Length: 504
Image 1 (tube, helix red, strand yellow):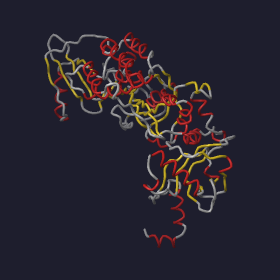
Image 2 (tube, helix red, strand yellow):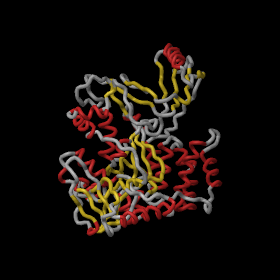
Image 3 (cartoon, rainbow, N blue to C red):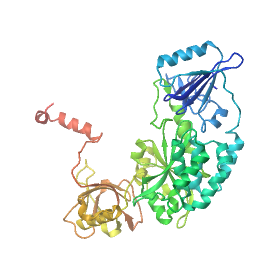
């Protein structure tokens, strides 16, 4: 299965390793791995596998998602490997290498392994499966497709053994069917190896009858979000999980609660669910441009829905997580896709020629926040900063602070006297971001924002929601950001008398 010049490595130890050795048959090594292996190709004259030149580099290998086009069709669904040895002496060398590595799973020799072709991942079966799941509600299709992509079930299991039982579950449980299918996914990962998938499904149905089943419910400020994990070879489906919402999701959720299913959180991960990592002699640029960049440019399809890149928050980007959306028809705004959502966020004209700044400002709308009170146009105003080197801090009146506190208490189900009333809030409001503190000199419902807290303009808005990122009920550690650190060092070096006071 390996190509000339390709390098195959596995993250983690194999769960099963079998070697066959027989005089009348080929000598093969079978790998049954916990996670798919990494595929790398030896570069020639600093060119990518497709022949395109991608810059000068001393690195000699490129990361691949599949060995060739035939393998690319199977790699997302099955990651077992069968390696045919050309030389019988290589078998002894391999056993010696396994002994030296002292892995927890040692090779086992068997005289013969019968291989029967079943075409589990042929174009016909894959096409039939996706044609079937496109006929059902998307939440149910998401779970069923997840079985295949997680290698929990194959196409024969889904099309021949479980298709009719799944259809009965969908018919009997109706809106709660997706929760049963989610529980079945968890049970498949934990089932005894001697239990068939059909028996496992029967057990789940017996333990969760129709009248007793309780579906997941999201508290205020959160929603049930389906997660998609993009690895070098696969697309894994998880959830739905209770996830903090943001301004965009809440906006369309208020129009129709079902529209929240159109937004998915996408994470780019290694096969073992850790963040990407590279060997020092691997050039990752080709892989990032084609695998990651290809997903961001072209999107992907899940359960019959086409998803396209929408945006990200700065905190999510640190974890390689972004938001995708499937275009939909809103009952108020009509047709909505990723571009129309981004265009509705505000005026970014001054940053359109600076991609990083443009994306960072847009990321403000995707920050996880809790909904709070709504502010009318006459209840907030902008004021100048305290000085040229500070963003300043906005202020709110005690009455507005009480309104925010009461709204948060009701959302969390807490009584007012069970907590400490915050005196400061980290917030998002239209194009503003930063911190607000209670100013007892302000009367009525009033909010005053610093001009430097405005990152972009939002025009013609009379009523807007004040979003809370974090509430501060007690002092917390403070730290300097990166830009302030060199300024502080310069300031101290120019004033030797202060150095004597603070010490070395």
